[in-house]
Image 1 (cartoon, helix red, strand yellow):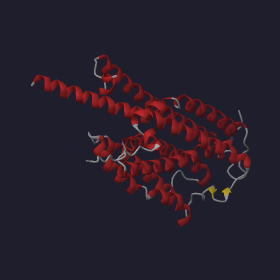
Image 2 (tube, chains in turn brown, green):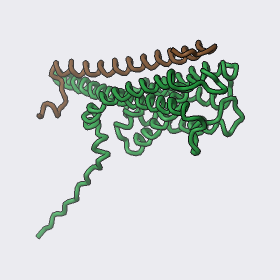
Image 3 (cartoon, chains in turn brown, cyan):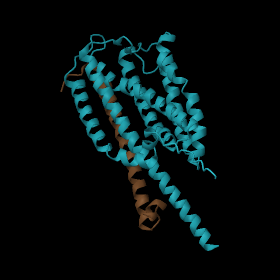
Image 4 (cartoon, one colour):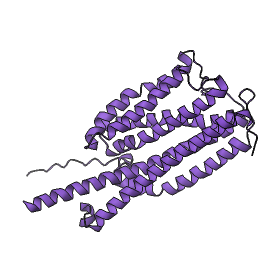
Length: 56
Length: 258
């Protein structure tokens, strides 16, 4: 690891803070996507499907 | 003898076909995984450059490494809003559902990137300028941008009918777009503590050893945005589809009872 000098706290805080925000953003987006996929799968399991799916 | 006239049906353009929500779900499904891989690889290269293959700046020293995350997030904070403004035009002029979806999916992402830009800017400012915050043109207009993102995210949640809400939010988004040139030119218009733009029409005002990690990190964060935006848009289309199915099912049940 390189020597980050006297301002190491500021540099690492920036990277760690960014990593936390980006990680939370990724988790939130993926969780939202999985939730909607599960909702549609549950509806399909109950026989509630789009008209185009019933026609085919 | 009567002559029947047939009006030729106008075929939708290739763009309209691609932008149909169902077609979008189909083609975007093939892009998500390649985008994720490309984003991870670009971040790997960017971080390696940022920490192991770039020198300290002759003035700022090691704190220049904060620039490799601050500038990409500041760039995204404005680019995401520009994408929302273009989507708002698509929503108002063509009433395209995918434009509404794009606008809604981008807002929380823009808020997060702007928050990171403000946070890293403050942490960079303290050792460089001696202060975390100064009410100068660039910083204040970026804070206003963050508050606008938060306002737009909150506004989306107040509408039950998302297509009606989209018209109103599109107008607010376009009005707020006036802030983007203010952020961009604030460092030229006013005497500010914030340094002038490092990227201009004349190129980059820095040596290649510092410009390379910066550009790679900008690409990595831009790819991250496009990946998350695509997944969030897909999610929003599925959410609307599920809502419509539930509404139709309830209506059918009520009809059957009567």
